[in-house]
Image 1 (cartoon, rainbow, N blue to C red):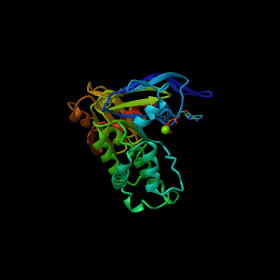
Image 2: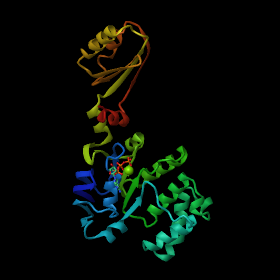
Image 3: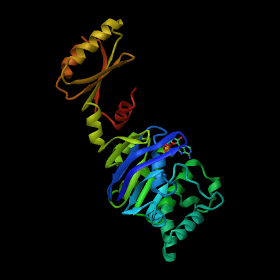
Image 4: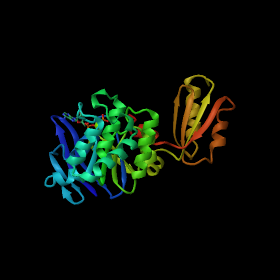
Length: 305
Ligand SMILES: Nc1ncnc2c1ncn2[C@@H]1O[C@H](COP(=O)(O)OP(=O)(O)OP(=O)(O)O)[C@@H](O)[C@H]1O
Ligand SMILES: [Mg+2]
């Protein structure tokens, strides 16, 4: 549905996108994660025909961003990082304005807007002006605006940033409901959001894809299947600590050991050696817990120096 082909874009000396290639299938929800400045917003703005690339192309439903900007724009609902809303409009009037602009049939506009206002929980503020809204309320209007023409493709750049937990939850559940029906790109810094919503996640860094896969693939690939945390009493000097690490590293199921503030974080391929690893500490243990790796672990591990 969206084919990104050898896309490059520089701003002066900064290479925001460096020969980026990415295919997004129809009906897929693709997450893009990556550090600040990785190029996420730049890629999105090019797909939405707001920014021109230096080279490369994006095909949206087979149409090139170099030729079919108007058609492509009408297929996409875009929530920018900071929605630029007409400040003096009332929320309802803003949505009407965009509905007309995008060619929503006149007879359907009112009911569509009612539906959207309800969805983003803004019915009670429909008659208030945008310039009286807090950040989160603006974000809600921005989401309604992105959806007003019922587009096939939705592109959300950090949709839940700055929202209170209940509203963020509603938005996530709403995105989940759209899954399958729409093709969706979701940029986010919230790893649990990416993990729970996305079919696939692309990790972007310095304008290139570092890795891509289902959240499960990424989690099992980058770290072990299981993480064992062992908190200990102060075991003594560096020599003792070093010996303990060496002993743990000796187990074949151990992939990685880290010691921070008397807590050992041990990545394991399986749980077979857990009992024996615990025995290494000869009872000097304050707490033990295991957890499955999260996408946050994947992210932190990918960008570890
Ligand atoms: N209009 C611009 N002029 C100059 N530099 C820009 C412009 N837009 C983006 N950049 C630079 O391009 C790089 C990529 O920026 P981009 O906004 O795509 O990153 P991002 O991955 O969306 O980051 P964030 O997570 O902070 O939103 C950054 O170094 C940024 O400073
Ligand atoms: Mg961005």
